[in-house]
Image (cartoon, rainbow, N blue to C red; front, side, top):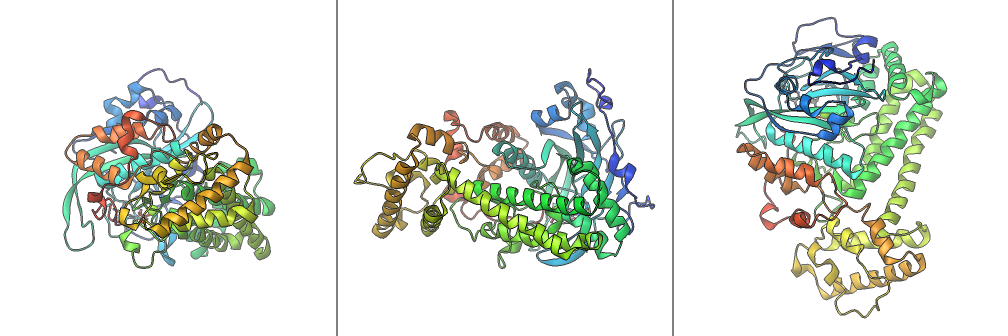
Length: 535
Ligand code: AMP
Ligand code: MG
């Protein structure tokens, strides 16, 4: 353990592949698509690719893994993280899991295009699982090809790093590599398949276990395996809970409820819409996982979803996320019931979600508004009215909250134009009717009174608000611009955005343009406002 890293070879990394060592695997080694019963994973080998090219890597993630810049810039890095080679200690495998998709039990899903390379334990004793997304088929690939395209890989790579720097729990991304292969995709499932450049992201997380890992064993009645898997999860990822047992199981479920609630509060704070909150896309650690047709709210609209597949039901729209997370936790509770056999205990533990979310959201509102403390009697109604106002005309959520920090709590309320402060956040000037102006003015008057009672000096309030209301997010059209360039072989904007989003709460005057509202050309452009699961 804990070998010092002295040179540029990935073979020096310390792998400790506990998942494959301690859990039962699929005895069949053949990489054919099938149901895999009685096992937690299947060994698979990534396929080889023709001409890998490094688009970008994240130095922060490399540091976590104790990889030197020399390692990251080596040919070995390119070969290993494109799936062409294995470093010493890697034992590639795909995980078996199931899931509820759009509210229905979908049976076995599994890592259909994700291949775990192994687990690095660094000198801080932190465990990091490395996973290639798009490195070829596995037994869980069903009818698909196991590959990923550059477009979706840029989106996953940039967004996972952006989320981390925003302070939102997430899986990370080490690298983004173009494979030099073409991948056929019918982007809108409308009979227009196109060849697109292929790519592979190396995702990094302490664990990739999902709610669906538990569901698959429960659905098959594999209760011994279910318990073994639960014990493994607690011992590996929740060691602070102590020895697995009846009480520990409930405590564990409470913790999953709590971290999930905290995650959703963060998503709502920054205006993130996951887009596909199926139970197989819910991390047991409360991390944002599986970046697919996600999107960022531009104009504040709780009914918005970027996912065209969900355009009718809007199951996974922004405003529904808190409810869906709870629904998913109920599925997890059902799955582990055979081990715990305590309906009441599970029900009570589930309530942790509601309580944590309620408290977390109240605290979040207070922070977003710069209030010392959330006072339900006055602030709930005040916040609801603000969100209604924002929803009544197209208002950029990110810009609006950022501007609100500049609001002068001392100025007289007869200021000539109360809207002037927010002018950059409005998408349609024709919507700014006299009624609207009056409503916003009334709200601002009320907010001013509340701030005066709050008693935090404006300068300090502004600094505090700007620590929770980001200036820069990965606007949907920005990601698309980076993709357009990358598809032409120019990776500069991918790297520029990666750098921009390292400091999302800071003013970056030379990069002001990235904080501006979505330009009109992007309103209805695919990739900017509409995304499908095709990736
Ligand atoms: P998702 O909706 O992306 O979370 O995917 C749901 C399931 O489909 C997971 O089991 C994925 O591994 C699998 N899947 C998605 N895309 C592909 C693909 N291109 N090839 C193989 N499996 C895939
Ligand atoms: Mg998934």
